[in-house]
Image (cartoon, rainbow, N blue to C red; front, side, top):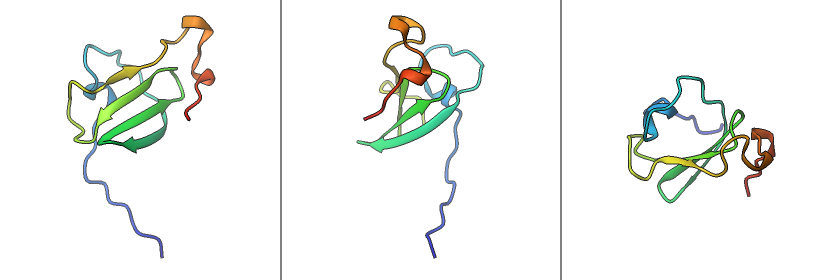
Length: 81
């Protein structure tokens, strides 16, 4: 039998990122955990979020990459390696 996952903490992505964020949904499609951070790829934006594993607002949290529409980028153009 596979081990069971247990939810221990839950937060809204927009509440963890610095600055005022639009109230629209954040369509996360994938998560990688590395060096005490979650890296989140989205269906609806070309940027990637880095969020501390404490799931609290932090100076290290933020959006990185090209903003949608810059350089012809759209969410479908993102490749995570």
